[in-house]
Length: 387
Image (cartoon, rainbow, N blue to C red):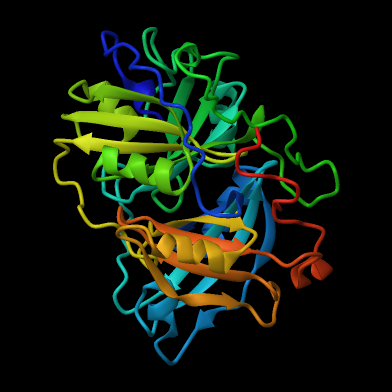
C-alpha cells in the first residue's frame, strides 16, 4: 500500500535525508518469517491465495483448542476459542499464515483500511494492468478504481498501483516499481526488490499459475495510531531502516476511493526496510471519520501478527519483554509433536498494538515435509542486515 501513491500533484517535497540505520533490533533475528492474519473462511482464503494469486499451500494444521487458560495466556484470545491454521508460500520470499477462529467474543466484520490495526500486503508485478486483467478472469475481483501513478515530486514517483478486493475484506495492492526512485537521492537505504523467481505451475511443484509478471510480495502495511511512535518501535526496537516519509491529501474523492477510505483528512506514511527480504509501510490517517480505535484481537477477522525468525527465541523474548509497552504472552514453547514438531515460538503484545511472534525452526527437516514437496520459506544463511 502506498500513501505516496495516492497523493495528488502539489504534495510536499521530499523530506530530509533519513538518519543512518542504528543497527538495533531483536537479538539473533534473521528475517521476517511470516505475516499472519485471521480470515472468516479458511477454504476461501486458501483458494484465493493459491488459485488466484499463484501461491502454494504448504500445510494445513489440525484444529487447536484447550480446555484451560492456554489460549488466553499464549494467543490473547478467549479461553474457549479454537483455531485452524494454514500456511501458503507466496513467491520466492514470503510465508503467509492464515487463521480462522471460532470464539465466543470475536469480531466478524473486517477492519477498514483506516481502522487501527488494519493490515494489507502488496504484490510487485511488472505490469499492473495485466495483473488486474488476470484477477478479473480468476475472480471476479474488482479494483477500487483505475490504476494510478505516483506523481513527480514524491519519494515513490513512477510507481503504478491499484487495490483490489479479497474474499476476507482486506485490500490487496498490485504495484509496479521503476528501476530507481527519487527518495534514493536522499538516503543510502534501499527498499527490497523481489526477484524474478515465482512458481508458475509448470515446474511440478503443485503451485498454481502466478499472476502475469509477479515477482513477489512488495510490502506489508499496517494502520497505526501514532506514526512517530510506530516508526520508533520499528526502527529502534525491531531494527527496521527508514526509507522515506510522505503525505497524501484525502479530501480528493478519487484519492480516498483508491485507498478504500472515507473522503477527508490526511494520510501520513513512513516506508521502512525490514531485514533482508521485506518492506513495511506504516499508515496514519488524520481526521478520518468513524475509524475504529482498537487494534483487532488475534481472533477477530482482520486480526494479525508479524513473525520474526530468530536463532534464540528465549533471548529475543527477554529483549522484547524489556521494551516499554511490550508484554510476552505466556512463555516460549516448543511444539512437541505433529507437522511442526520442534518449532519454538512465543507471542508478544507491543505498545503500539501490533502482535509480534518470535520463532525458530529446528535444524533439518520438519515432519510436514514428509507428506509434500511444498516448503515454507526458510531463513538459511540470511542475516538481518545482509542486503
